[in-house]
Image (cartoon, rainbow, N blue to C red; front, top):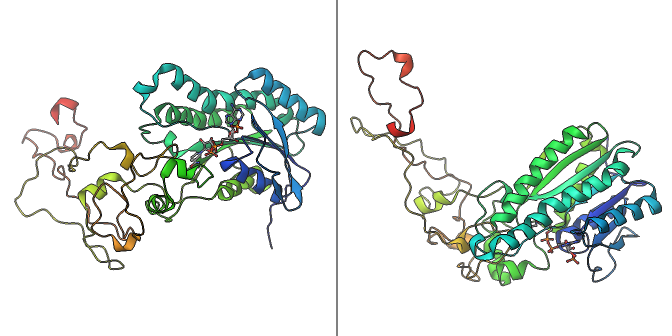
Length: 365
Ligand SMILES: NC(=O)c1ccc[n+]([C@@H]2O[C@H](COP(=O)([O-])OP(=O)(O)OC[C@H]3O[C@@H](n4cnc5c(N)ncnc54)[C@H](OP(=O)(O)O)[C@@H]3O)[C@@H](O)[C@H]2O)c1
């Protein structure tokens, strides 16, 4: 049996659906057959068309609750229903939290957390009355689940957004499903602003396990799926669309050169030499310089000085500095570091054996 996603007859609203990721979402929904309303402050550069359908543009500054109410009233008046809401509008400039100050941070949290909350609340009466159920998709970011240096307020807001989605999924069930697509880096019109030249962008792409940034349409496909009946039992979920995620930075620092040839079996875990007692303590890794511009994933703004050399394919750079790009051969995991705590300290003779593995208080480490 062939399964296709058909959203014909359904109405979708995409915030910030006019450019970047949002335009990809708008086009994907159009391709699936939906009627799409894209809202933003400025109109798109040209008509957003796909599969013979064109998205309708409605202007609104979503930071203004009255404008949000007016937008949803317009959707009610003109369509009488809303099947899918994609909360996509968002983003942030790059900069240290302390430099930007509280006012700028509040604006970022407003756009990335309060706006989706406000729009969702305004849309709820239409969504819950939708025949066959409705779906809200939050556009989240990997910045919401890992440290986000240079975009701290944004990361915090995206973390809150995912939590909001999970709470609404409970409060609004069973009529409305609420999910989050958690995006890694996506190639948009503004990518060069964020990541530099095409070569630099390619180098950034090579830090991703799938070796490239996502296309906006791929973010859109994930939204289409979550909007569709195929996802009819999925609510409160976070769908990662990040090409495999981020390789832990400490591995690059610990293993600047691959220890084993590609496509050979990984070596067995190293054994501590007999009698060589390992002192207790956490996993030890070399110092990793605090250079935010070299962190592998910044979905928000440009590394100020991308380090990867142009025209240097990933597989030809096995000597790359440990803190620049992904090691060239990620298919084979480097041999794990020896931990400093493989051996529990010998138990005192009088101590019951069951107590040996108890968690140690902080001061005991
Ligand atoms: N690009 C990435 O690599 C990436 C990675 C992870 C997550 N994301 C997420 O994906 C979403 C889109 O990002 P993007 O890169 O496509 O950003 P973008 O290119 O800056 O587009 C943002 C969209 O939101 C609209 N918008 C911004 N502020 C608005 C406001 N106050 N009222 C109404 N519309 C507003 C913009 O239109 P106007 O300016 O005309 O209003 C534009 O259509 C964001 O939620 C972002 O956090 C992106």
